[in-house]
Length: 614
Image 1 (cartoon, one colour):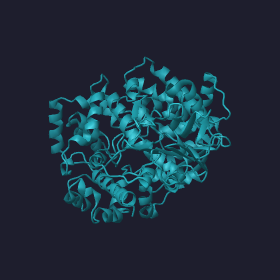
Image 2 (cartoon, rainbow, N blue to C red):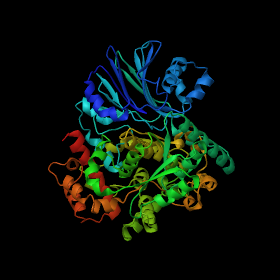
Image 3 (cartoon, rainbow, N blue to C red):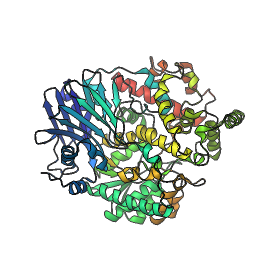
Image 4 (cartoon, one colour):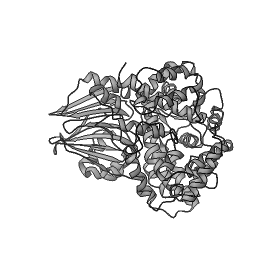
């Protein structure tokens, strides 16, 4: 795990790029220059510590800078009869590129972004892993090309200009949609994609080399028991690979749910006494007791991190600023704290990312297993809309009534809006207060939605396909990458292994959702490994009481930002509506109000601390 950066036709002071990426690679730094090309590498030494220095070269033809891990690289070397001078997966990538060209990507089980300068063709080849675990942002204006692992690095070396229409996407999704960023001419390389840059003409071509939608359309006929056995075997292999691909000790995050519990239970078989980490704090969201049951069952070296939010006002700006863009997901706060505490013990950590999106872990999936709300008839929409107008809004996030009320909400909407309501549901129903009418800023989303909705998939597969492409990519993986790398730590998710990504989407929806039961396949597998108390618990994670924070602990700082002179939000949303939100003088339900205010606050922190840099 590292940080990378580079450029064509642009030279910037090394101290600028170093200051923004050193936390991703504090152990060793290197650079490479050739004609109009610059490469930079920041290394967090984990594998082949002695010989894995980058940039790495092969035969004076190829030079690579690389961020990530290829967990099956030793197996690939044997299968492809590759011989190198090191044991580094970095060299494996160079050897594969030399032998197979870009087609080798399909062999890799890993999380990666790498840039290879091909001197023989005078071009740069940049590729990203299937799910997009490892990040890559690039600036391109036709005259120069600059890439980096984090947006803050690009912002440090370039005078970047805000792209207004993308902020409307942020207000609806809580993130910038897919490849988009806050800036003009700055894109994120999308998951499962690669770039080819001609270093002479600066012609740029982006290609999708892997697409989860193809696997949702390729249904397999495995029985439930066959799928269960295969899932068990894949998870064992994925955990084993992620433990063995490190010369440093590997630990595991442990929440109160089955995902991290399964990872921990299997990791214990290969690494008895593995160090596990969970967070504990007062209130209804404390899951440390459930996590402790797993730790005790497998006698892990357990660390229960008691988090005090007494200093939250002092920390929140720094934590949010790490993202380099407005970032809505408030669970970034506990994720940062638990990673910071775990870093005192280990530099490599296992997590359960991807299990919910692949195996059906969200409660909103349940109704879609029975009915395709994306294609609701006018009658269903009309009845649902009428009932919603009659009933009072819900103020309790996890109540049965809230679930029913939200069900009515998205049942009353047209196709693309259904997903927005069923997902983060921030300004849904209140976008009339936006300064710009709903039009072109959602055009990319409408195109993606229609592509999936017009397929022959069932409703459950459609929403899970959308979540993989949007929620997992733009939110969950970004959150974990920044939370860990801000603390110079590498996170690894066995559930995002190549085999799961290409197998689980092919399984029938009833293997994931059955009645009101979510994540059926994993829950059944959990009966083999976990204490009974965990198996039928609702989805768990490092959650926080956002409504309480907004009304109490962070009330002063949120109010200060949103009532300051010249806030950014005034360009996109009516100021009087925000004022009413602050004073709680609207009909917005309490949980939704908290999400709205947090979304706006996160945007203002980015604007003041990062974009305006003061």
